Length: 312
Image 1 (spheres, rainbow, N blue to C red):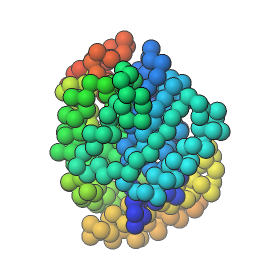
Image 2 (image 1 turned 90 degrees about the vertical axis):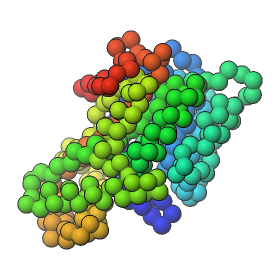
Image 3 (image 1 turned 90 degrees about the horizontal axis):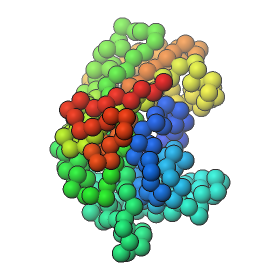
């Protein structure tokens, strides 16, 4: 993750959006929305609104969105970009959008998941999905358990979708003698407190699945980044190279913070990047937790071992 002085770097968020949208498993979403005419979606730590731009076309036409972020500048950008996107795609009549600044460090404010929020009082609330992208590796196990408990006792929340959750699988091609030292330092650095307690880091995907599997039907699908020549062709060379430059910088900065001098490793990798000779694979998992009564007919169920949804 690349942070600015106020939060996450909006340029980084824009760069990663194209990769996220290309690899995220769209087949998870209909398992929540099947047979539903209208939904409410609460997007936590929304950044610039990438989650709305990805999920909205996959959901029923009538939607109410609440975007939540602590960074006021990012939140304003999210509102502007999502409003423009909805207008461009002719969805402003069917989709309502609200934004709210909020601090998630102590959990989700109750008002955020109040079914009357932004809607008509007295009506039966729409099924609600709580979602977040690239958040779970930043939070602590204690925070995650409180989060799951809160949503379990909130009946109208029918699904929780945590997307692009880091799962600890990272590799480089070609290999380098310092790869493992850099990866180990990167993982140690990920465990530092990001404001939610000691961060889950590389254990995030497994922790999310096992925590929600206690009371929910959990399904997983792969959303791994393969930053290779095919991705470069799809994104365009300039954008892809900038993305790869950011990603390499994360590894070097994390290793340095943990006492390992990765400058020579970074220089070697940057030369390979400039020659289109470097592939980086960063493992992510999308996790959908649905209430057991809302489980899909394909066999998802409450279980200690989450269902794995094929992506190809």
